[in-house]
Length: 291
Ligand code: NDP
Image 1 (spheres, rainbow, N blue to C red):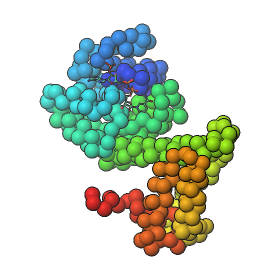
Image 2: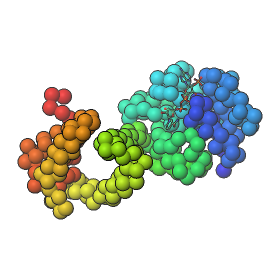
Image 3: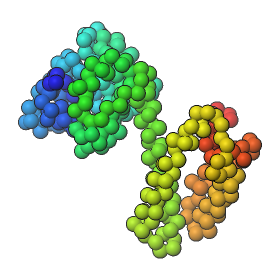
Image 4: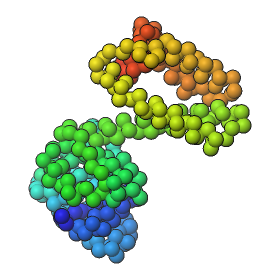
């Protein structure tokens, strides 16, 4: 299909999004605060709208991808009831509360609204490598699925508008946790003269193995039952003590190892020592004492 589409925000990501629509033959209207960033896209056939307001009205579907929701608010909050028949898909990164708020701004102008999150870097846009999460009314997602599909691999998470942002944040904690663990290990082996490149394949193999445990462990979390099938938490905590001791002994930062152990120690104190690691969900799933 070659439905018309508008892209608002031509930063690194917005340019990639607009470029993918043009490449797929969609009549593409663009707008950016700094108009010069549209030059290359206009040369490729995009139409530059003179104002954000006109860009929003130019197509039945508008993608917004700007720095943050403060900018989204500026773009959506002026005017009233003039975007009836328009669907806005906001791919700006933010929190789930911000996503629900933005849906209200769009709703006040009569627009339909879906929220999304891009789990990819700009060069991947337009390939199946680019995973783009969506949440909001299913019918609105399905109405534009064909057009959106040129951007990458689409995932529809559900009607709750906050889900895309929530998954985005949940993905970020995966990413930074794996990277921090790798950096900790790298810092440790470097004290023995082992370089990062030598350690990396070992780290990669371990990360892959641990990732393989997730579906089975998720089953324990969902059942709320944590029998120690391969290892008891009290055994893990003894190994955590070695990790802390070794980090301190070789003189690297031990705050991340100490945090890992502190969380497990609390679960042991609560009587979970004979259970398996995913029992720690109780430490993550409740707010801290004093909140
Ligand atoms: P850039 O910094 O490259 O672009 C920011 C965009 O926001 C520009 O178009 C900029 O306009 C616009 N903007 C900022 N302030 C205003 C304002 N006050 N009024 C109007 N427009 C404004 O960021 P990216 O394109 O990289 O990122 C955009 C979104 O995509 C972010 O939410 C980011 O988290 C998300 N994202 C980015 C990824 C990446 O790898 N780059 C990956 C996944 C998500 P101007 O050109 O005039 O400054």
